[in-house]
Image 1 (spheres, rainbow, N blue to C red):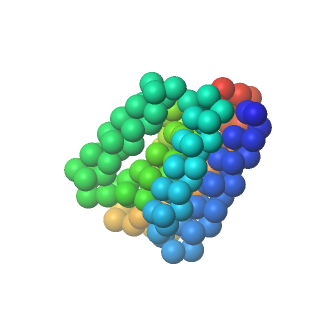
Image 2 (image 1 turned 90 degrees about the horizontal axis):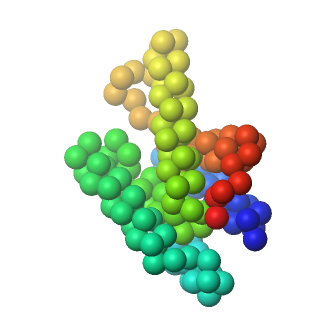
Length: 146
């Protein structure tokens, strides 16, 4: 079952990444539908505990609060993508994806600033970094994602 959830996560992030790159938007309805379907599937298969559900809500809630105070440095759409991921994958794994994606985004941003392709006020779509981080973790053997 692990592979099914990993493929689901990759497909979800790929679709959101394409949209984020093209439009700099994330379709909230896609995230919410994915979240609801994932929760239902995992509950029916007895693969989601109440604790896991709460962890996903708390992580996403904390990111939402950060988003408000930073004037959407991490956008609301990105928060919804992470919420949906917490239903598809384990919250601990999503935290690893998030931390790695922030690191990759930081390195990428500093590089672009250094070669003067962007300014300090520029924004970058974040979901592609989540996808890249998930792929890196899978490549290095991150098998605890469900």
